[in-house]
Amino acid sequence: MNHESVTNEGQETAALFALSALSQLEASAFDIHLREGCTTCDNELKQFEQVVGILGSVAPPVAPPAYLRDLLIARIDREGAEAQSKSTAIPLPEQADAIRFKRVPARSFGVGWLSWAIAAALLVAFAYTFTALQSERRTLQAANERDRNASTEREEAARLKEELSKEKARATELTQINSVLSAAQWRVIPLSGQGPVPGASAKVYWDIQGKRWVVSADLPPPPEGKVYQLWFVTPDAKVSAGVLNLQNDGHGFAVVQIPPDITQIAAAAISIEPDGGSAQPTQVYLIGNAS
Image 1 (cartoon, rainbow, N blue to C red):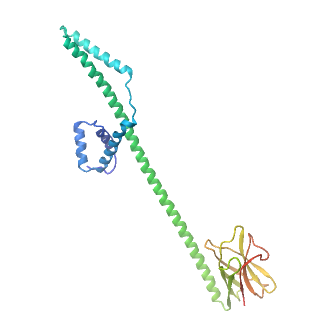
Image 2: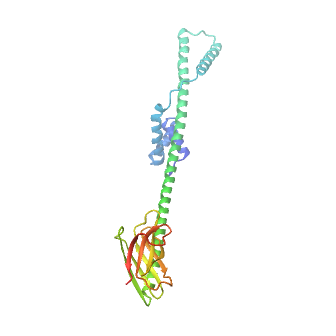
Image 3: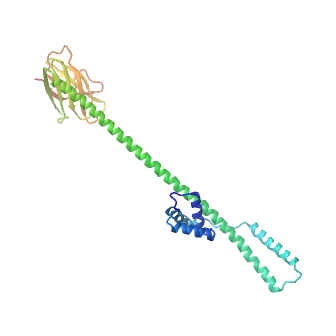
């Protein structure tokens, strides 16, 4: 049966297989499992084989403790003494040499077994660390992907919200302009850019009987600490009609009522003023005659 995801048992089997530490039966069964096409276990085995390949360079040589050699020699001597006490025969010199010769493999076996055990422990620890780091990396990648998707969704939601706000404002503006154009008496005052903003433009839709202006303007963003201000220009004075606020794209829209005491309007103007506006215009940016 092929595995769809990595399991602890599969990791342990792959690690021991890479170390050649499985029994013949277990190794044969795992080899058959790989031949059946389990890509999950195959990938795990390849990773552990890489670990085994670099284990010699990352694990410093470890010498067995001194007392282990003494214990092994003492045990060998004790077993030899017991064997001699059970036999009345005097060993021949060849036999004595053989007994002495057998001590060397016993010591070598102990040292070899210890080295193998240390290597196996290091491999398992390194393998689990390697696997944990991979799992953590995959988790971080998934979290980063979710964050990127969430950020993109927030940006898209903000953009759609801004577009919707603009559409609503534009619909309101068109409704106000149509209401002026449907009035019994109306007039349009086009304003042209002056001095610093020759490309700026605006229109005042004047409902004469209703005594109101619907202003639509396209202007560059004002400098820091400045605002645009609208003016009723009469033959005798310039009367403020309020501050004209702009959207991010530089479009401005306002509906203003004409004061009852203004009976004659000669022109409309837009000036640039300090924040809060001025009592009189200081620098006119746009102007248009009402006649």
